[in-house]
Length: 532
View 1 (cartoon, rainbow, N blue to C red):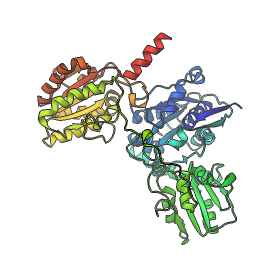
View 2: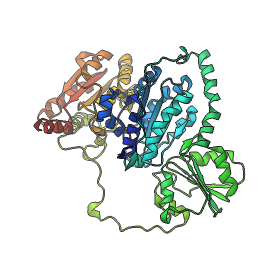
View 3: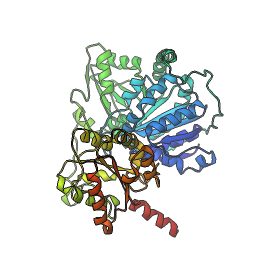
View 4: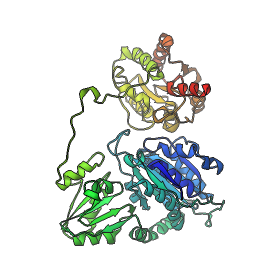
């Protein structure tokens, strides 16, 4: 079969296409964005009429993928780790409803928080939902696990969680393709009440999920991705998870290890294999890129008095991305450090692009707020979050998608007036609309600035769900049309924009100011494309 050079994200996308998906649903978020983008650019996907539009948020993506599964088709839903928080409600309940057509939930975690608010580990969600979890150690496994994950999903009629991390998502390797499979035909569920979670039905469905647990564990025991390698040196046994396998092996010449090794890439934990290595070794070192999930579980069920080392006891760092050097230190090996980076090439803080509309918006907002003092601006997740840095120092919070509006509301309810929310157009349609509805219902004295650059700029310029109709959405939610203002954030309109913001700050109800100008990057790209 054909061999392709693919990133981990791309390998997942190609694995889904070759497995016969009929649709992919996602909201952009690093490091998962390229899964959807690969499908959108795929000739194979276009020929197969594979649905591949961005969703408003991860929850809607998860639910749409479940709906496609209901119709008997195979679907994949993709997100970053914090996106799974947004999709948690349908994700957890989909384990109870089960699926009809195969469904894979691909989640890219971000250890070290390269572009995220936290470094949570999505394996917890898989364990919480009692679902099988696949964790590839290579791009080839990422491809195969996606491809075969649909088979596992349809065998047990449950979603399958596929978890990868930043380093695997964005690095490349050769991937050998498997035989392409045709898409499923439409086929409705045999049980017409399978997806109706009334308590009486949900209790029965939950028993079905519990009855699958032994089967899931058996699948893990027999999985080709879980492997035990015996060794002569029994002083320490290694249990490595997913990509961490490579971090261990890179410390040994020709990747030759003399100690027993258990490689785990499919969950639930293969208990028999774990007990085997535990019975043969004096102690265990658990290496996992993320939370110490396996390490913690081993300490709970081994009950053999064996010492288990890893991130919990400090043998490996408790936070951050795992590296070969971390493993080398844990093994007592000498780590060769290079020369210090010269100051001339040291990192610098990120900054907004020259000509960015957010710059002019913040300049007007800062001037309008001068009489009131600092600490009144609640921001959100996007390029405009850089307003926290010099020279703006304009925002005071950034917690999660949509929190700007609701935190500003809470502060206003507490008596902090004026109270300002700054949110982007894509984030507004993702999670800000419901916050605006709360403000409207309660008549909260909040000024909401939607910095509308007509794209999802922070992740590369993907389609934004509300482009061209943000003002209509706000009025439709119930905002007073006389206090829904559209401004053009350009330097030449600075005085005019500042005056509008000042007036709305004085309003004792809900105000929405839409600072509307296309992202400078997407506008530049469009001009270049027109010249071709």
